[in-house]
Image (cartoon, rainbow, N blue to C red; front, side):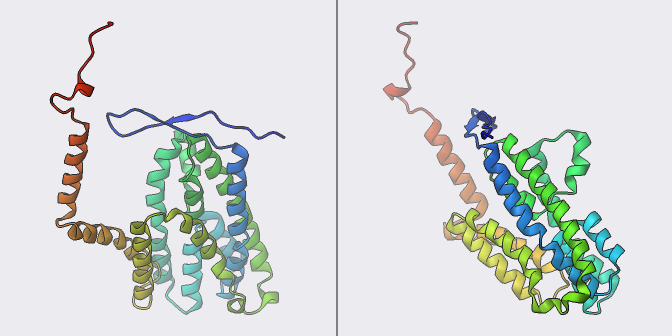
Length: 279
C-alpha cells in the first residue's frame, strides 16, 4: 500500500507576518512513530498491574485506575505510596499534583490540534507525556492529529490490557522490584525527550530540573518535586538576562528594538526607494 502524503499546510506565523508553509510528512511515517511509542510504553502497564496488586489493591481497583486515571506516573506514585504504608489521602494528593502537568500539555495541544468541541472531552483523556511528545514535533496539523490519535489509542488499549494481565499474574511473578519494570515508562519518555534538547540553554534547563527533582525527592511528597522542577526554566532565563548585563525584561526590550531597527528602511537607501517607473 502506497504511503499517503499530505499536502503542505500553512502554519500561522507571528502577528503581522505571513503564514509559513510547513513541509508535509508521510502519514505512514507518523503512524510508525506513534505505534512505536504506544507499543513500547503500553507494555509497561504490566508493571503497573503487578505493582498495584502487590500494594494491596484489588483487581477491580487496579483496572479502574488505568481506565479512568490513565497517567502512568501518577498511578505508580499512588500505588507506591500505598505500598510504603502511606495514608490514602496523602497518596492521592501526591498523584494529583504529579498529574497536574497534563493540564499544561492540554493548553498547548488544544491550539495545535483544534479538535471539534464534541471530541475535546474524549481527547483530554489521552493528554499525557507520550502523546504530547509525539504530537508537538509534527510539521502539520494533519500529522499532529494522526500522531496524537494513534499514540493515544494504541497506548490506552495496551496499557489497560497489560494492566489486567499484570494484576492477574502478580502472584506468579513474585517480587516486582527485582525486575525493574517500573523504570520502563520513564526510560521511554526520556528517550523521546533527549533529541528535542537541541540548544545549550535547553540542556542546562533540563539538567537543572533533574537536580531540583532529585534533590527535593527525599523531603517532599511524591509529585511535588516534579512540579517544582519546572522552576528551572525561569531560573535559567533570569541568569541569562543577568549574564547579558540586565534583567530579562531589559534583554527582551533590547532584542525587540534591534529587530525593529533591522526592519525599518534606512533614509536614502536606494534599495528601499519605491520604483514608480513601469507602473
